[in-house]
Length: 313
Picture (cartoon, one colour):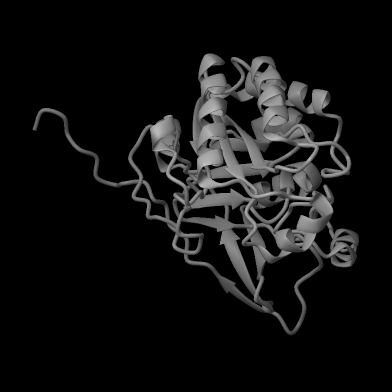
């Protein structure tokens, strides 16, 4: 099984110690987002955890501990946008993050570092032309550090995004405008040696040379592992999502970046409370297992194909 770490929060940035403790002990406990009294015990041992996908905006706390992941396949989805403190208030300065991405690529190789330029937010400050200029500047600085860049436009279908849309002064582009902008972004990326894909977009960008993204990418894991995997599409994600099935070990309302467009972290009181209840030694990301909790061991199995084809027979 693939471990998603995590769509719900930035574990590499804020909870790296907890993560490495969980890997060392071979399991993590995860509360059901819909019923907090239900807890899943998720095995993280290499015999069942085929790999990790790390979603982050700042993997710096993990950089000097990556050898602790020897024996696992993994790669990073590194979100790096040009926005300032008005939109991403608690991130380090962007020139430092650009350097962090290059350092990460030096450690693990560029094919295991995927740059996410998303979401693309259009407003009076961040116009199409402004994005094109800043994307080109960033792409040139990152040339050679990654082979893939993922884009997506701000999705107004999320309730929390809609709530902040007025504050962000967000504007929606027409399909034609999106296609025009995406095509120009793809030309810039291509000139810098990067393949571009689009994450969970209803618009078809194939005419621009942009394929749908698969952020949990079975093909990449097969390359990293050197074997075939029997993976299925993740039916719990949006219809436009191309990700393979995975198990997420994160928790909503626990990321301290404070990004105004975030769909997963929106209750700042709950975020502060969760962070106060974090213990790196606990099997849970927050708090402890209580007497009223029901803990069930999640059925986990490797997706590696056991019977390999015999060449020449």
